[in-house]
Image 1 (cartoon, rainbow, N blue to C red):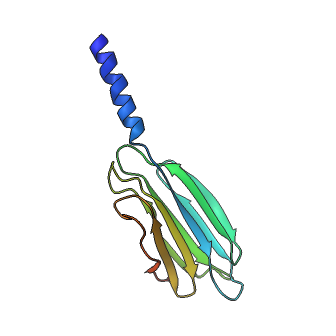
Image 2: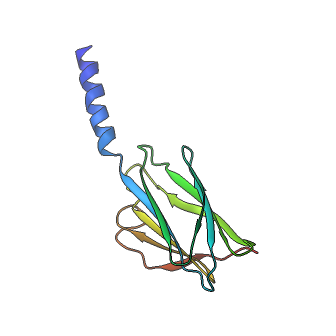
Image 3: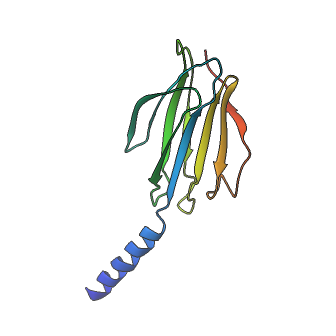
Length: 137
């Protein structure tokens, strides 16, 4: 019984050391005073719909899970009539050893841009801002 207790204690310490903080950011860089509506969700969390004014940003941080399966999905819509939209994976942990980093999303007139900062298999340092998705009408 003592051996089992020691094993479980060591296992829990190892599990805690593999839980990393990560996050993502959404910014409204749309022109012509267009607002940006968005909502996001994961398996455990739901971010209530929000509207960002031009030039505003919103960000969140969270702990990734030990299995390496943390994922957030988001839907963005650009105003004023919110017809142009896009749904995408806003954050994805690739493995248990992946810390995830911070995923920086920016809504622009010609699409949605991404830059990933520090850590994670996807990030290995810093990836330059690039257009990831176009808008759907």
